[in-house]
Amino acid sequence: MTPTDDRPSDLPGGSEPAKTPVTGPDLAIGRQFNLLEILLDLMPMGVGIYDHNLCLIRSNPTWTAFLNRYSRLKGLTEPGIKLFDSISAVKDTPAWERVLGGETIRQDAIRLEDEGSVSFWDSVLTPLKGDGPVLGVVGVTIDVTARVQAYQTLEQRAEERVMLSKKKIAVI
Image (cartoon, rainbow, N blue to C red; front, side):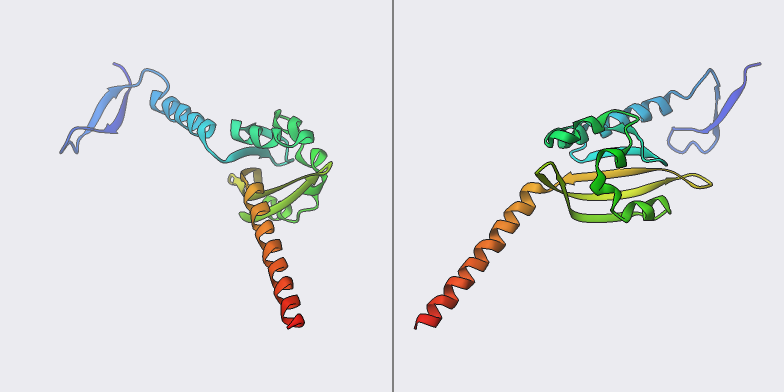
């Protein structure tokens, strides 16, 4: 007699559980894991998964591409790198304490400056929770440097127009 697995039948109207022999690990779980890996690799957002000490466990290629644009940050894509040791500006952000405390945080246009290189990031940080304490953090990030710089340029031009208008009015 072989062990069986009681799973609902996939046939229409089949309400009786199907008896299928258990032969080993569920291959569907492996396929789901592979699909998650593919999704992570193809996401247009940078994703970093960190343990509770904020040491990198996994990142996707988009995260690597974002960091490679900024010279000193290139080493942050290797597993085991501790985030705070690499980017001191991040350490001063109170959001990390809140996330490690169990709260999901969204921050827009976070300014990071590293050796004269300025970048802006939209980021969502969420804790990885088990039954007990926070196990780690998932960060999903978009590089919004171009958008923020374009907005700043527009603001500057608008300010210049206002000043020019005031000068013209003062002359009249």
